[in-house]
Image (cartoon, rainbow, N blue to C red; front, side, top):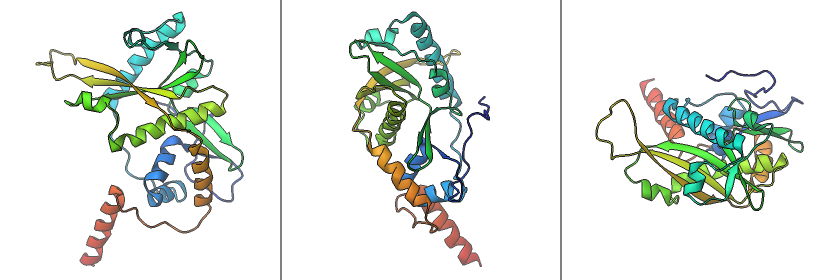
Length: 258
């Protein structure tokens, strides 16, 4: 269970008259890129969309992976996963890592030009033994019969994951870390080979590399969002936004009933 810390506040909505920084999570950037209307309703008017279903099992797997990496971090050695994949890196040690990994605290960078603080909680960081640059690492838990296809990491819906890594990279680079171009998605997949439950669940894993683009696009997007939030006009609905399509059908139904 996560508890809000008063030393790490969050903004409920953007106030053009306020001099306090607007604190924006990386998911809000993703929302803006997906649907301008939903982003405006959320960040400007404080009207939030439905919360996603909590991924409790996924969170438990994340926690166990973090513990396993923390053991190796303390010893300054590779985990078995890094050894098995011939990745020349070790879990990165930093005095603020625990803060950066906690969802309601997160790594935060204050962009002075816009007075927006961008926040994101990274799952883990690995330090390249040769270059000393830092790999962004994100844990993903799933169950799919097409694990090999997933490992190709080229499906259109994965753009959100790729942006996620790049936003983390931008924040941490602004906090002084030298970021490696290659990030990793640590995928854990519940295997189909298991025939009965037997009070356990068997997994296979893969470390999927993703070579990030120039993540300076994030700063340009933050500037866009600042100008966007200064307006007083609700944008048009995005054609492929599922929530906007639902709301459109809902209001059409209400109109007919009245």
